[in-house]
Amino acid sequence: MLPADKLDQIVQRLEFLEAKLSAGAPPAEIAALSREYSDLKPVVATIAAWKQARADIAEAEAMLADPEMRSLAEDELPALRERLPQMEQALRIALLPKDAADARPALLEIRPGTGGEEAALFAGDLLRMYQRHAERMGWDFQLLDLTPTDLGGVKEATARIAGEGVFARLKYESGVHRVQRVPETESGGRIHTSAATVAVLPEAEEVDIDIPASDIRIDTMRASGAGGQHVNTTDSAVRITHIPTGIIVTSSEKSQHQNRANAMAVLRARLYDMERAAKDAARAADRKAQVGSGDRSERIRTYNFPQGRMTDHRINLTLYALGQIMDGDLVQVIDALVAFDQAAKLAELEG
Image (cartoon, rainbow, N blue to C red):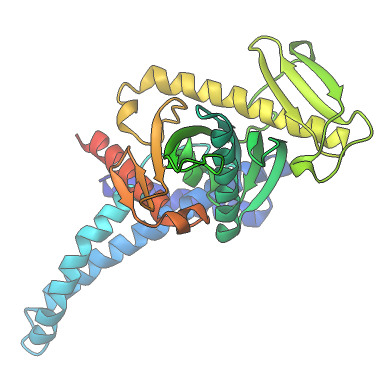
């Protein structure tokens, strides 16, 4: 726990930001000040609640010396003392170092892995799962690029998801998702295992990543639109190649101008993610112990359809609610991952 003077500094910082924003900060500073204010406000609220809990205990203990108030104090104190450790834990979590990308929108990329057409069908199921989850959370889900298969699966999909706490919640989804089920194409009723890879990247702004024009090659091409709902009659689809890394991104909506903007946003996110991964690897030897590492090669989850269960291997969580999960009800799963990650970070700080 931070000393009292450090907690007071956090409160004073929020008051300073509030005054500066109310007085009319310079336009260039407003976005950064507003972000910091939004980050600090729940922390200060938790500090206030913790201080109030301590004050309530002190007041009740003082009442013990008063014969007329003693009985009331004895009734109140057990509940007050029982609540204090919960308040202290909430404060420790609130004071954990924040991932600077947590408040950003996320770019979701899904690709089939091993398993042929069944893997592509499962990739499509995952895309629908995340779209429905976004709807449940009140987030904005925008499909940027989709390459379907003839049987209704997905060869590759990219979506932008925006809303409160999107990356903070979805970053735990990066990795290999495995499915065990009888494929629609299987006549013998045998259970097959296949996989799809999910990558969740924080959206990068132009100030985060500078991409010189000489580093990219832009090609236009004719392509079907998202979901095959329309076919472009002009060369509006865009493919951008980042020459130094060999990264290739595409976007195939109706507007060539929008496609170029979409593809550049995806490219910036991938380069920004590479920078973040390099920094994390350099400073975090314990990264494997944390569930938010974003290791794309790690098998993180199994969806077993015959048994109706989902297992998250990182935290040994098994839920027999596969239908609800595939319908986008991921709150219980993500809450457990967030709690595990917070506990690991607390143990690291206090160990």
